[in-house]
Length: 153
Image (cartoon, rainbow, N blue to C red):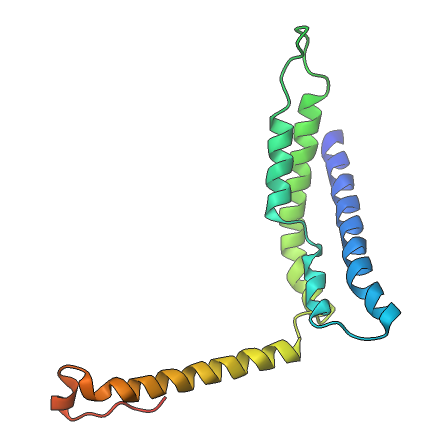
């Protein structure tokens, strides 16, 4: 149980340091320059450790040899594996459950500019698709004989 506590403490430190690092590399330069860099707020979401970091950590812990070349057991191997697994589970479950709440609380998902660009792109895509359907309508087999015209979306 002591090792799980160490794993949770390591997880909390990891989360805090990573959030401070992201904040320091995204927000502080904006404050210094006194201008807003595009989409910097949405990048704060990246303060969650990624899948690759978890996989590498687990692989490194499991790659430790079970015994030393002299024949004795590798010191603290089991403790390292347990702490690593605790950190992985805590960051997956803990952050996975709290991240949506945190994004809503900090209004990080409410990037109106990005949503406007997405809506505009969808509208242009819909118009282009409708135009192409109207261009292809006369050559579709069996459609011209039925007499039904394509509906506008």
